[in-house]
Amino acid sequence: MTADVLSKGPAGPPPDEPVLRLEAVRKTYGSAVVLRDVELEVPAHSVTALIGASGSGKSTLLRCANLLEEVDDGAIFLDGEEITDPRIDQDAVRRRIGVVFQAYNLFPHMTVLDNITLAPRRVHKVPRDRAEADARELLDRLGLAGRAGEYPDRLSGGQQQRVAIARAVATRPRLLLLDEVTAALDPELVGEVLAVIRDLKDEGMTMVIATHEMAFARDVADQVCFLDAGVVLERGVPDEVFGAPAEPRTRAFLRRLTEAGRL
Ligand SMILES: Nc1ncnc2c1ncn2[C@@H]1O[C@H](COP(=O)(O)OP(=O)(O)OP(=O)(O)O)[C@@H](O)[C@H]1O
Image 1: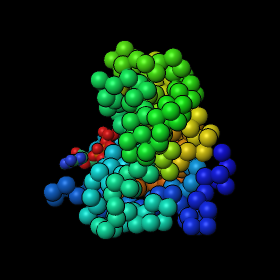
Image 2 (image 1 turned 90 degrees about the vertical axis):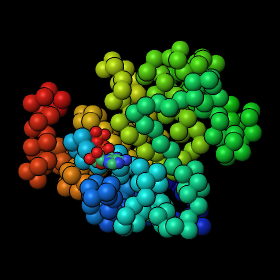
Image 3 (image 1 turned 120 degrees about the vertical axis):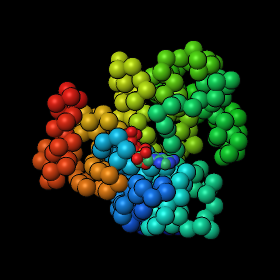
């Protein structure tokens, strides 16, 4: 898919406007500062990987971007529109952002097909026939053809997570946020989920991915941001951040991973 196909025409944002932009974002929980002056730009059709130790603020950043958390200071823009403006219609913003978490959060009493078509039909008012045809096509692409009528508990963790990703992209979001989507999976199921994310990248989906899968981040990301205690300490293309990190704390983080056999 080309940028032309996805652009919003004359009324849309300027072509060089990042899909997501964070300006001096600060987030606290009580007296703890969890995000500190975070700046981030996510260009259209690019993948940003957020890496960093547990507790460094990766999930919080994603939750702020999706307005699940209120920022204390700074501003967040989606296609150039400030979404942290209190006058904004938050539901309308969330309709433009897909989110997938570590826990798949599928509705257990609904079939795979109903899980995927619920938001397109109820929220986006897509007619049932159309929503179901789109969902079946998606399932096909994600290697889940024939699973439409199953209930989630009949599927493996990897299959459930692929359904969760299908559900998130069924509404054709402008931006997809993925938070540790392989963390709950058995190691042998991780690859199938990562393959799906790689396919979405190839189709031009703009994504921000919080991950502990360093090899994947290095392989799939256009930009890697290393978070350390709520600060984006280092950012760059994967070869810079992984190959020649400038900051001692990035080097120490990567060394720990190497020693643990995870890099
Ligand atoms: N709702 C909350 N209330 C209070 N503190 C919170 C809350 N959510 C997160 N925190 C704290 O904010 C900090 C950042 O957490 P966050 O989940 O964003 O880190 P993370 O980098 O995503 O970690 P992980 O890799 O383990 O998922 C942590 O110290 C965490 O304890």
